[in-house]
Length: 130
Image 1: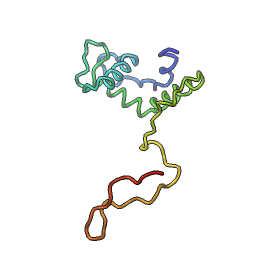
Image 2: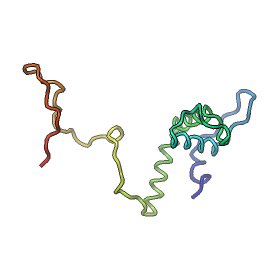
Image 3: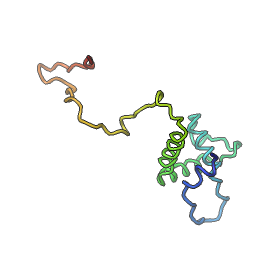
Image 4: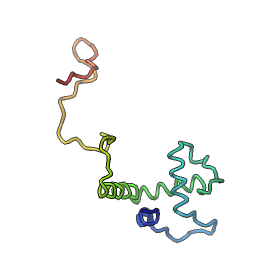
């Protein structure tokens, strides 16, 4: 499994250049720049030019375009399928983020933030599970 066979087919084809200027940074270099910024946490504008990824703005624009095209969701599904086919998914380290996973059923009735009786605050601790 290599970069070209895995990621390249998912990337949208670039449109024609609208203005003359410097040549388009290769997708592989932009991807490396995106991963560098996401891994290190530096700001896009401080992406070192010496690393050859293109400018931070170029990488940021490419990230936004690929996000809009659904590249990351497709890549995620592709990698999951590949790992599943090799029996290499380790569910011991799985995490579910409730902002992306819809609840199957409604939970218990929510406790109001403030009690209306006598102006006292509602209980804030979680109920014990038996």
